[in-house]
Image (cartoon, rainbow, N blue to C red; front, side, top):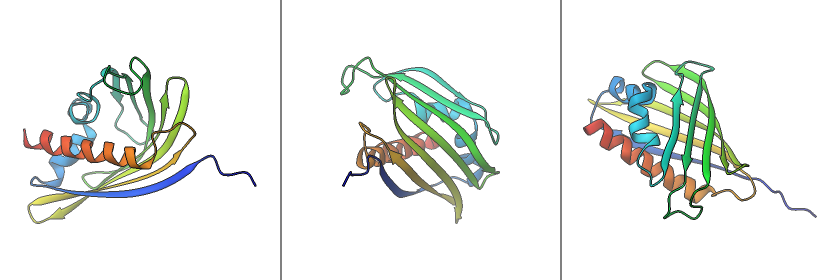
Amino acid sequence: MEKPTVVHDTFVLERTYPVGRAKVFGFLADPTKKRRWFADGHGHDTELYEMDFQVGGAERTRYVMGANTPFPGTILATEGVIADIVDIRRVVISATMSLGERRISTAIVTFELLDEGDATMLVCTHQAAFYEGADGPQMRKGGWEALLERLGQALAA
């Protein structure tokens, strides 16, 4: 019997930031602010980051992997579509990631913002299909943990 070639995974990460929901939402919605924590400073060169923040709008990233990565010089690209926006409450994005010329995953990422006193709890739910040669669920979860840490740093700056 042939084995499946796609690995499916879901993880949920929760972070509480000591700022209001409107500020956190701004760092999800404003392309300049989001680029700071989401696209830049990961040990590779960011060739492209663009986002059209509206339902149906595109979000694109394109990196050249750095010398200290497993694939130096290789292009890592993500093409996404914003599927849902509820102002100051929720953003849902679907995106496909490619390494070189090969698609490695497709994901739905949901950001939910909840009041926690004067703070905001961000609930990030990541649901993905990982294709052959993908980084896999554990590496992706680690990547999102680092991204949410960077978001916290950006919010505090």
